[in-house]
Length: 303
Image 1: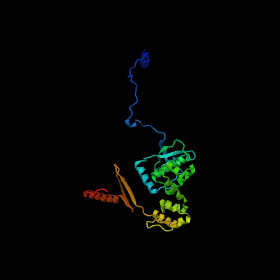
Image 2: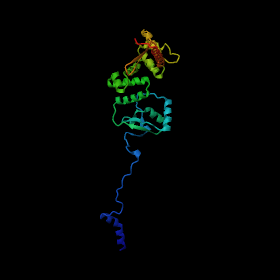
Image 3: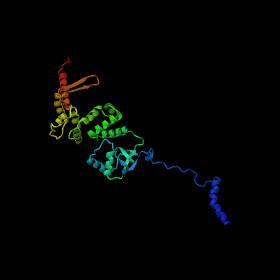
Image 4: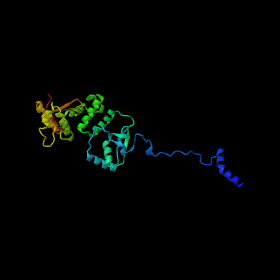
């Protein structure tokens, strides 16, 4: 009898449930209310962290040199504050690694900092060689990280890859055609002079002026005229040498002409045949205003 009673007690809850009896609270268990900071957030598969050894620079990246002092400063910042922006990477079956599209400077600084991992944005879709080079160029141009010859070679490669004109390249990467023309002109210089441009001995603008000379001999003769006291070969020196060797007279200094219009149709024109600045212009306008007030006081009529 005792065994029967104990057996009934064990199965009582199941019997009750089979007959529709609910002893416990019948309210459904609801999911917890999300924290306000998590509302609208979602995980993204194209952002994550990689072991730094699984990432490598792009062998065809236009930028080839990095300032060691700047890398040290960035490495210290990453150590103290963490990596603020992920690098952009794509998968390479050939290398079995993630190749950097943009962010190589951050990658190098992270290695200098001794960190084992790096935050990345993963490129899911396949990119053409042109698209990769465009992204690298745009990032470097925006940061002004490319050296002049690196920039010129990257421009030249994009033009050759796509059969573009300088104007079409400018439209593609949002750079003025004149900048592209000046940049490509550097590739016409002898290699050793290009090296001087990279080293900063000759500025890119000065080198552009020298590229206007007709021959390598003229370019070398112009450079042989010697640097200025500052130690470099300036734009002014280059322009002077080009004028001398092309037989052109020195350019006359241009004056200034500024027009100021009022809402009711008046125009005030300020001109001078010499160089001037706005402070001098303001003084001239003040003197003119004093003269106008003097004429008003003396009842001088307009003719």
